Length: 486
Ligand SMILES: Nc1ncnc2c1ncn2[C@@H]1O[C@H](COP(=O)(O)OP(=O)(O)O)[C@@H](O)[C@H]1O
Ligand SMILES: O=P(O)(O)O[C@H]1O[C@H](CO)[C@@H](O[C@H]2O[C@H](CO)[C@@H](O)[C@H](O)[C@H]2O)[C@H](O)[C@H]1O
Image 1 (cartoon, helix red, strand yellow):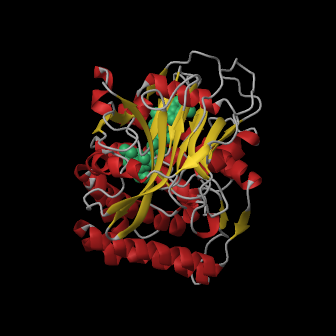
Image 2 (tube, rainbow, N blue to C red; image 1 turned 180 degrees about the vertical axis):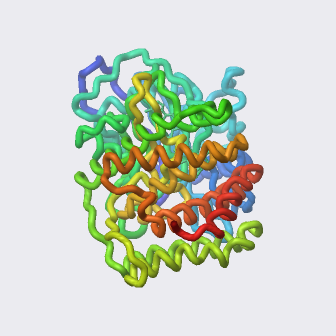
Image 3 (tube, rainbow, N blue to C red; image 1 turned 90 degrees about the vertical axis):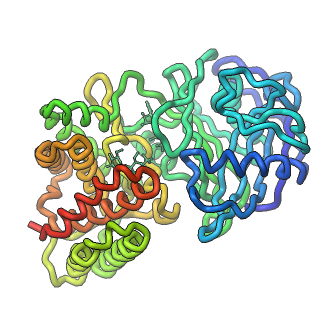
């Protein structure tokens, strides 16, 4: 992203529901090195404590202010009343700089409800003497963000887009979602949910791209995006001209339960969740069909399959180097990827494989069951650890199926009921096959390779974030290392 800038903008005008007044004239950009100097000591201590901070355990080398923009309430003035929007690059040894989105409030004296969200008092710079805190937790500033989202247009280098039919009623009470998350979400009056991406990559986030494509195709399997905002700061590489997605406001699905919670409840009572699992399989296949129709899809040639297999083998090697417990299985697991490459080379038989846009990180927690029983898929971001270009590429849909099969295994092993997994994995595949016409169980080489790749990813994820859960993917790797495809 480009030179540092600090943007102070005029107040957002008051609006009435449905009205779309123009956004004020372009604001003034100023460079203020004092701002970064005052933020630095606070960020050094606060950032590593955030769940979404990717570089945990590594020292922070330095910061680079990408952009700072102050959003103002109607009639507001700078300082305690505004919301400071910051994009900052964080440099750490051994990894490319990560760009984080911060939304900060500043106040001389924090109310007790906000104390735990404090970064600390700023010393020097434009906020000297004010305590900075995480703005999404402040209902006043969260409401200000929603107010800004209802007005399409630019504020500095931030661009706000609103779907023409979206009408936000006034007075929606904001609350930060307590779900364990990679990002931060604010729920407004059980009507909308605003997901604020924390670690941002230049370009369009697939969560916006895919849920918008599905909604525009009339799919009922997605929560419709109604507004979003982006940074117009140019980024490096091929997406330099594309805006960077920062936040997406979607319809909230009240009364829905996530698949992980439902599955855990079923495992605990050794219950029968098979009709729900089959419905989820059907929903997955419907989403795949809609994505294949809306966005490019193609048949994969042998060389492409061999490249996919090589990528899986590389990730296995990287994971074995990072997670010692994986090493004992590595040689045996490589056979899964060798078989996939042989499928590509034509020395193992198998049906043609297509690639298309997919969910990319499908698991039970990414499926919401509405009160009427219909499943909706959320969070189309892909695996957060993969580069954006890879997450936006086409991939075989069996990758999503494998992700969900892993999730049934997770739910069962989490509560020590292995047989539950087998029954529900079968039911999910039956549902998927009924709609797609392709039964994943009849593609043993493909499913074993993708399941292995996912379990390898999970081993690294758990080692980094939840070491106590590492035995779950390890037990899958043990199974997959001895299971030849059926
Ligand atoms: N449209 C929605 N309606 C209701 N709840 C939602 C909706 N979208 C997300 N959620 C809730 O918010 C949680 C986090 O959303 P998600 O998109 O998975 O964020 P993250 O990428 O940060 O993990 C979900 O587990 C779900 O409980
Ligand atoms: O939902 P996220 O996009 O943050 O996905 C990441 O975190 C998930 C855990 O919250 C992780 O999923 C793994 O644990 C789940 C149970 O908590 C399980 O259902 C999944 O099958 C398992 O992969 C996901 O891998 C990670 O990308």
